[in-house]
Image (cartoon, rainbow, N blue to C red):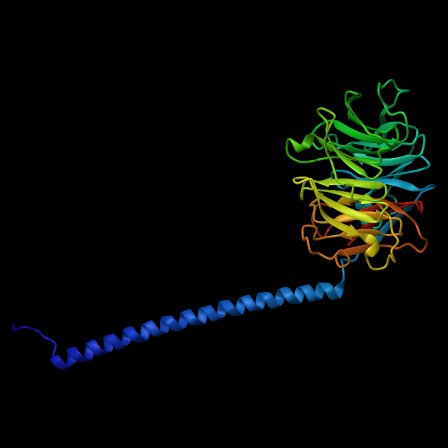
Length: 389
């Protein structure tokens, strides 16, 4: 058999077409790359437009709206409110010595049979639920005493006072309290110029934190060690941070408030300590640098005409929002707290106001998921109210 060879002209045509096919394929691939890039650019532009549209929609809609879904009226001014760890029960205390327990789930469903009332001696200033023993709640009183109750059974568990045989107990009105997140420990603030750290199971004072004047509030730094041993207190215009192991002052924060500090709360979720004062300001303090991160002057916000005092303040469970009681018949709710440039007026939601001026003295959050929270407020118009988005 002879050699099988391509004819010269056919070989030439094949090589020519193969070369042209390679050029065509390369051009198609390049065109696809350019189209893919254009598609990505269009997608990014679309995302930017969507973000701008969402921002414009939020500006048009204003801050999140809250509605009052339940109101309980008592016989005296309500000074304190709190919510249980599981967000099922709210507690309020008033100046007539009444402790009221509210079933939040029933209230959210519109039920009116939601309340249990207990009578205690003296005017009551504050209430809080234990985090390590969730059935326990504590109440502070003008009669110098601290009362512990089992909110499930309604049983009075203990009284911490000099009269009940507790050495070094408070000798004047008790204004506030907080429970530690991991230990059977609570702290209490009093007009006797002391904050006491207690082992509430052993019924004894562990530490005495002395001050030069009345102490209005206290809160634990609910965070990782070693900060978990710190207690922040507010007395007049001064905030001090103590190490509860040694009773020593770790830091006295700069005096940025010009009137009494009433509210104090710490969020482990965002690392901020918040203070609320009768000067109308809310200050967020960064505990990692011991400096003020942001100051919100509520008197400069729309609708206050230069007049407003801030009372107690509370962070939401995830630390993204802050609620503040005021003497202007409303609760202020701020969000986007981590944004240094956020405008407080635009990020504020207003609960209320009431037809008659009243001091919304205390607030508490219920619910874990952002957007599904409830708020509980206690006011000097003798009401405890539950608010929902």
